[in-house]
Length: 418
Ligand code: EPU
Figure 1 (tube, rainbow, N blue to C red):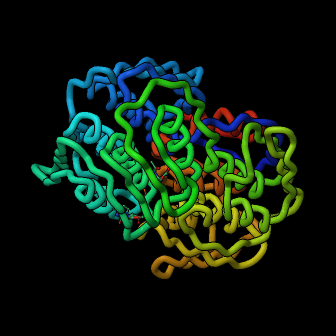
Figure 2 (figure 1 turned 45 degrees about the horizontal axis):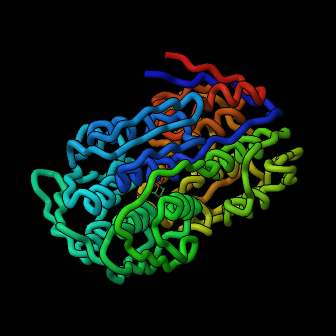
């Protein structure tokens, strides 16, 4: 199993191009199932989750030609030979659930292994299933698989009980080819949902209201093939911002848009430092120790749960005491125990963590438990004095392309070891 060896602390300096967003690429790849024509996606990040999604689509019968080194993925779903997302793939990537809506609406049937709980929480998919039933699907659970069938889906008014990102995406994709109008209330407003809507619209779908909490989709008969460029990864960008906040220095992140970062950007600004927009990028400069920042995670435009561990890492060495509340997932503090090994002072009470910023952290051996927790541990290790070893770095590779190479480019001492 690969590990990172990091020797800190080092100020960061340099320039990076931020990748396309993982959480936009995954639903957009699945949306290729809605058309029989050629689709070409660019700015696709070269990530393990993206490769897993390509494998899943190939299993279903989609012709996929990926050139991920150049960020390109060409797809053609004119022939689908299977309607199943098998357990072996779903267990490695929950986003596999995103084939459910498109398969059902274009092919009348889908079998998707029921995703189990994972390292960050229970993560049920009841809202996805409820909506598809309301659109006329027959849904049953057989041998650990969701089996959904519908000769035709019908538009309906769907009121989600809570805000769900992939739930909104699944319903939106299913509704594109449904008969009549679907209204999704309490919809997710994440930029990745908006990017999916933009992609679907260019294919001929009739969607309004994406980016607000009410999305309207008027069903159409078929969707055409198009080219689409994935938006930038706001979580990758914010992760590097946290790294420079913790370590100090100056970095330029190219191809990002602060307007798409919601409260996450406001909170990063509160840490101190300066953020200057220059052409398509942002120059971030931290001269002094960051200030501790309290925050709670919320759906977009609130502070992203996917940034909680990384900003917590900053808080561990920040000036002051901060209170962090995790409001999206019930078990997303797995990194706390590991950060303590680096000398962080963190108390946890239910979904609240209280962090007492220390002057310095010390290198240690730690273990990554999930994707964003790993990123938090990388940041804490970059600023810790001495050597840290982060085990199970495969979690990080699911969602960050070559983070080690990028950090080395910024002057950090990072080595990938077996
Ligand atoms: N929920 C339900 N029922 C449902 C759906 C969700 O109870 O049917 C609950 C979840 O258990 C959770 C909350 O609603 O407590 C929000 O979950 P959501 O459905 O929004 O999460 P998701 O769609 O499974 C996406 C991202 C996650 C990100 C969350 C929240 C993708 C592929 N995944 O997950 O990304 O944390 O939204 O923003 O878009 C990551 O990239 O590291 C990651 C975990």
